[in-house]
Image (tube, rainbow, N blue to C red; front, side):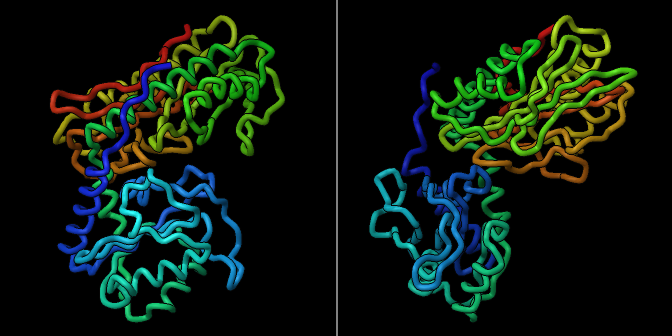
Length: 393
């Protein structure tokens, strides 16, 4: 397995908190309340981890008054004129990038967060909240009722802007994660032979991912047959639950994502089961062409919408209509799905050191082609970070 890159320095975490507090100050806020979720999920943990390098493994359980509250959630209270306070629900250790005296551990997460707001003077005035989509209505109402003099403002954009531009250390971690994902999908493609099930394929990938210290986020997978008697095989929960074995003449598409050292990978590939047909190859190649057209249009100063248009226009020029479960061409990637969104209407300017995923799934006449790559934007142009085998035909 490839060498693991170094992690993020404590100094970088301190600088992130400083810049977040400065942005809050510039917007007239007294500070920020940042909330993230853990509990084994790899969805929406990024904001607190970005500022403190902390993730809680404790699972979500309903509140029990006087015993515990807000389990599986973490809060960082970040005033503009005081030191931050991190609220955790598991015993802290030396990996947290914050002084021990600024960490509060306990079962009553909501109550401890309220106390930290009061201690830092954020119990009144304008306070930005980051992660409101993570907070349940009941949890937020408890906080709101406890500090009624706070004017809550949505401040998600502050962390979104900071997280969009990656540091050299982050790029190293994203590169490492992308290559682990590449090895995983190659193992999965190798296992995709006549008679194998979707579960067999995912199991082969996990043999690569787990020893590398990674976690599977999802595995969008489908197989089938096109033409006059089409067949489409998939499952939702879990995505690899279909017992139907692959057969000669079918196609397979894999779109996998996961996490290594906190940073996401996201990669897609397609192949024929047995000798490929011309129709299969046409769809596979079309998805590749659309992604490559978008990457070619990606440079510092272009907008997310312009980049998306290049790839989507390529799809139209090839004679395939735009439809599917995701209408864009891609997204930012890091400690989660970051901005920009490579989609119509997103006019965010592409900047150096953005990490972006380009993806396209094309369906036609019962056939599916799927392809996805991760790139980092440099002043000279995009550099591809994934290095998985592209063609199996």
